[in-house]
Image 1 (tube, helix red, strand yellow):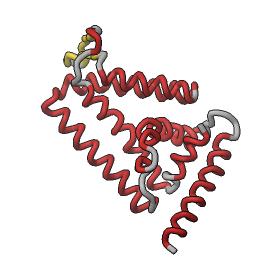
Image 2 (spheres, helix red, strand yellow):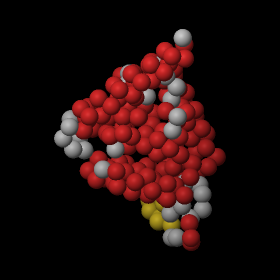
Image 3 (cartoon, helix red, strand yellow):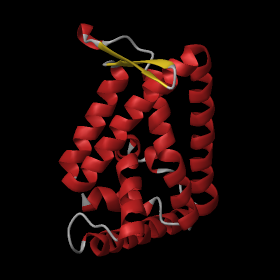
Image 4 (cartoon, rainbow, N blue to C red):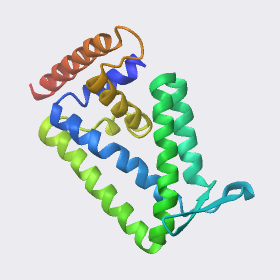
Length: 194
C-alpha cells in the first residue's frame, strides 16, 4: 500500500491540487454510480422500494451496485479500518444514487452526471497543469487513477484531520517515497530538457 500511495502522492503533492482532488474525486465516483443506476437489475435480483420525503425510491442491484460493491470490498482488503469507512461511503453513494435517480429520472440525471464529470475532471486537470506542473497519474497508471483515487483521497483527509495511519510510521515512509519519486521525476524532466 505504501508503494501505491506514494505513486499517487507523487502526482498530488501541492496543497491546492490535493484540495481540488479531495473536492472532486468522490463526486466523480458518485455520479458514475448515478449514471449506472439506470442500468437494469442483474440476474433478476429484486428491487428494494421505499418512500422518503414523499418520493418513491427504487434501489436496484444493478451495475451501480456492483461497481460500489467491488470498490468497497477492494478498499476493505487494502486496509480494514479506513477501507470499511470507504466501503460505507461507496454504499452511501449507491443509496444516494437511488434516491437522486428516482427523483431526477434519466432525462435530467444524465445532465447532472455530465456537468459534474466535466467540471470535476477539468478542475483536476487544472490542478495538475497549473499547481502540480505535472501530467495526471491516469496517463501513467489508469487503474491507479480510477480505482485507488477515492480511497487515497479519504486516507489523506483522515491523516490530515485525525492523524490516522494504517499502521505506525506509514505516513513518514510514504512521504519519504513521495520525495524520492518526485526527485526521480525532476531528474528525468531535467534530462529531457537538456
